[in-house]
Amino acid sequence: MASGVTVDENVLTIFNEMKVRKANVNEEEKSKRKKAVLFCLSDDKKRIIIEEGNEILQGDEGDPYLKFVKILPPNDCRYVLYDATYETKETKKEDLVFIFWAPESAPLKSKMIYASSKDAIKKKFTGIKHEWQVNGLEDIKDRKTLAEKLGGASVVTLEGKPLCD
Image (cartoon, rainbow, N blue to C red):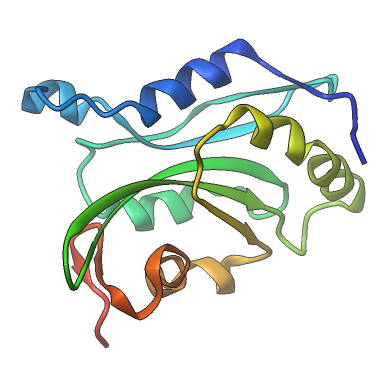
């Protein structure tokens, strides 16, 4: 079911910046790359926009995964682009993950409009290999859950942190 919601041009710009990884970047440029960005509906519920102030940069201090989990609103839905850095038993990888955050505690109306608008943003995010719908902190607080989405048992680290217990 389409909701008629459109995707703001800035959302596409952010997606393209996150998607294209330049090989020859210095550490300063790399530290300013976006690691995670939240997108929300505009106040009039007609456009998907960047949620200002809710992004994580590659160079931010601390564990980016834990920071990402903390910026998710506990009682409303969001779309998220997360640039996951992980290692399998064979190689290091980086993949963009599209996350639909729809916590159980979000209002029904919000869940319905976000769910019906999800295709609008997904169609713009071409080349995304991983999609994840998350319905609460229990589903997302453990990095192993994301690791399973990325490559199952072959993933050994996520954001530089080992997955072993």
